[in-house]
Amino acid sequence: MKKKVFIVLSVVVVLAAAYIIFNRFDIPKQPLEYTIEELRGNPSFDWDNGYYRLWSLGEAPSADIESPDFLLKYRRLFDPQYDNDKYIKEWDQETYKKSNVKNWGTKFDAFKPYNLPYGSIKDSAQHYLEHKEHVVKLQSEIEILMNRYQKLIDCERFEDFTLFRIDSPIPNLLIWLNAAKQYNRFYLLQAMDGEWLQGAAKLLDQIRFGKKANKGSVVLITNLVAKGVVRITLRGLSSLMNRKDCPKEVYEQVLNNLPELEYKEYGSWPLAGEYLYQPIDSWDSLAGYYKMGFWEKKLLYFFTQPNRTNKYKNDHMVKVIECDRTPPYKWTSDPRETKDVKSGWFWWLRNPGGKIIYEKYLKGDAESIAKVVQRTYAAKTVYDMVKISAGLHLNYTPDKPVQEILNGLETYKALLDPCSGKPYRWNDEKQVLYSIGVDRKDDGGNQDHNKFEGDFVLPVILYLK
Image 1: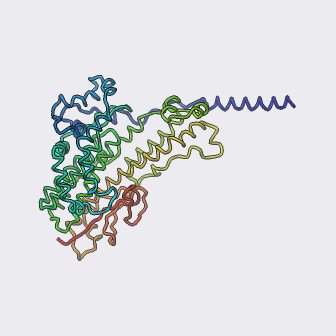
Image 2: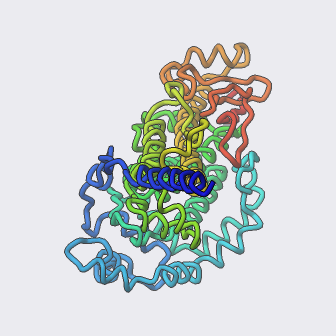
Image 3: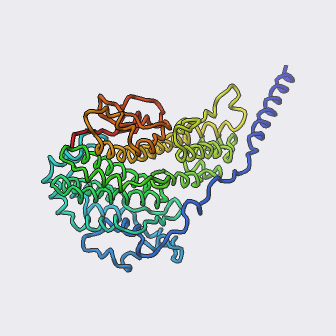
């Protein structure tokens, strides 16, 4: 009996050892699909680079942000001719942000009750017309900041020179977003005060800058804020065009100043940077990055192949990047859908620890970052639809169905919905032009404005001019 037990135990021990040894054979590190050079290029450190203006936007009113001596503190963080390690280590990002808040944040906080709520479908032009005195008051109180912001918008070039490392600091993007919103509010009011062409021109300037910043950013969050600036400004411009007293010249102005987009002007192309950042190229980095507990770290070590685990993440990121670059109607799968690495009866045979780690830590990150693609096509479609709507406003006549007028517009025929590969759709009852969205399902012009889900919708209110 004892002999049988010994044999059984021996077999179990041998199988267990074989299982552990089998799972110690990892695959080689996979070559990366993209390179840092492709992502970052060779950005300029000349003082005319608008990226300095973004960094210094929230500095104290008395700061001389035109002075190279003042801007040197930013340059030393990134320009390789300086000791970047030393200056990044000395940099205090929290102090930088807090000083921005101290300088300008209280002004924006005081305006919050009059802000258009995030995701609201209310007419923005009408909303701020109702709060005109507060918009004008804020503009007066932050005049120095808004003058700086105008120079940022007017910059000839914008090249993000952030270093490709996890501790590389980034500018205060919230101050940019707040300034962009105030810029929209103020120039919407200027247009409605009778200076229609001047106000619309300012909004078009901000759209032009947003495209430039989207193209010039190498950090994903900076790119997303640039895209957000473009999107909210386009909706403000659309709101302006929907007013009964908007003159025809504004529609012509819009048609002439929204040239066809190139991918880098609207795409989330710095997704490649998220892919290139490899926090799990070894077991120690994997365990440390996700702050694993003691037993998790001890037990999973024997059953985890870091390179294979990293490949699950990388394969999904490559799919997300390619989906961002490819019109949704051509997709073969949804970028938000991740591979189930624990499928099948025998999923546990190879790399079970890595599969558990992927499901617990990496899969959620992968699914979240894929939602960035929704913002790419929200920006692209609203840009197209604003241009189409300008032509629709200009050619509207009540004796023809709107769809018939649309069918005759060159912009409508040329700018196809990237989500369907077909013309944008018109809902006559709701008076909206819409894209079917990245889910590629026609929801009849319904959109979740907070989550970028459903259709991408643009209200178009038509009047006989």
